[in-house]
Length: 445
Image 1 (tube, rainbow, N blue to C red):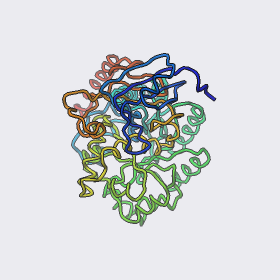
Image 2 (cartoon, helix red, strand yellow):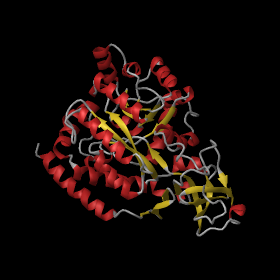
Image 3 (cartoon, rainbow, N blue to C red):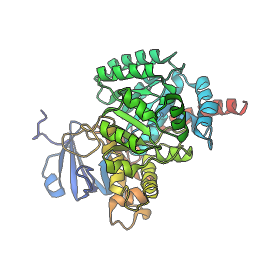
Image 4 (cartoon, helix red, strand yellow):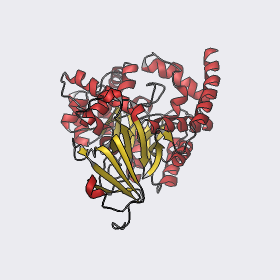
């Protein structure tokens, strides 16, 4: 057990502290203390200053909150950012993205693209992300080196992909990676069957068995478009969630990504199984996939998290911007100005995301004993004045340029907007070189 009498490693003194749990709370003139990478103290400023601390840091005009959780993305696709814009989903996938992946995706691509995505996310206040992309064993290295927290999803499809000849090989490699990273303090491995239309019942059964044996999560694109639903009914006679429920995949470890098409039976399945939904509003809007009924899901008791999706379909990994879009879109879809208020929107990007990834005992809220995964937002700018409700100003009047500091496990990965472990200029140079090669080949098609 940690020694509660030992000096704090760091005492932070923000203007506002938003713990997220309890819900809706904003603490003024409070402090947070870190010891051995964990939150050791939450107390009023005057009481906190009585504690010995190796470092005391004032954060005037700043809101301290849990670092954001990006619950769905394809990290290395940063290198395809802007390659094939303004196209419907299946045209985008079949005519552009899948051919580009077949040509370009290798270990170097994944390493460089993942590192670029990590840097962008850290600068945007994201301390934890879920990645579903090829060569996950390669992606694990930049994740480990950067200090960020992540869920790595093993991509499983019934046709050859970069790094796997078929679903069986993907699963075998996935189990090996799970074993390699079983005790990693910041990386979880999950299974990522791509979508109901790209994975057979036989493969789904293999995923279910392995997930149960390893107590691993299942992360899957589900009910993304009306076309997907129509194809499923024609092929299987039932909607995709019904098929997945019959195969035994739904449950507390199941992460349903997108869910823009929802009927009463779908909702009942999600509620009864205690599955989580991951909302990707800007990607869904850009691809005209539909609208996730966030307020309806929330009121029914479904845990709803949020993700950016990949940079090829968004085109940024700006989760703070995503939260604002989600809050505004939820109001329009529900026909209610009270739908998804600012505090719940922040919760969706923190504790709900951690819960979806099975990490809520470790991160997602500022509670003593949890990992010190924190972000400091600077609300002292012109555009944030005056401040009546700092959370409302964060969601509706701020951008990711207000992110000043970020810690994961008590280690500072962003200091005054500068990355502490990654060389931003080197990453930009690598990205530009990939862009020249990919762009020249695409224009020659």
